[in-house]
Length: 348
Image (cartoon, rainbow, N blue to C red):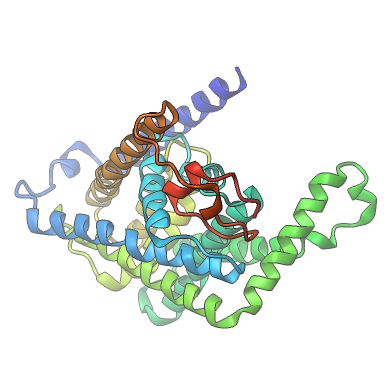
């Protein structure tokens, strides 16, 4: 019952925000979208998002290395793309992260602790790039300087990310008096903070992940820019490079269905303050949401095929036979996906 109420609330919030966003422009403005949508721009935006699965995978691999372990690149790429599918089909944009954690621990012989920390660190690298981009943009772009609407978006988002990072890094500093109420929970939090600080100390890997995150945000902004041009919006690329990462962070908040409504409202507020046509901005945001559903479809196909093959193996249909002597015994050693089915579960 609680899940039904939560889902219903998210649907209601999405509908209300979408209604508010579309009420900001008239029907005539909505019809002002160019009849000839540029297919080349649409194709470019889609291509950018497809290619982005590779740097997204690389960043996750860097997060795992910072924690002292490795994930097979092929496995990581598949889970990232399937995660893209679940981000669009589950009620929250964090659904793909939950899938990656579950799949990495349940299917590929990693502990739930490592799987969780690797995904959280991956997300953290992405989030830390947002204030860097936003603050640089406010300084570099004259239109952003002194703009009250932009300031009400940039500063709270940047502050929340920095504060959240500090809290995550110091969870082990919680007073002992509070720990008595849930000692096992606080013990896990302490281990997480220690592991996070240890990962950050590997400066080369952390810096590479941060630079990669900036590039990923830039590529996402480029795809949104292509969509804006596709619907006829006379857009400035630099504006999109600065605003888009902030909008995507806001859309991650788990209060709507896959960010619908939050993304449109944030884009219209930010770009509206810069003088952009609200109807075309709304169309751009909706086009981005629809495009991400299309991008996630191959991930859904990968999930169906892989899930089906796993089920066939469980029923003894062509399951590989691996001699026990060939099974790796080193603790924490990663198994090949096929070998993992035949070998005893390794403790990592």
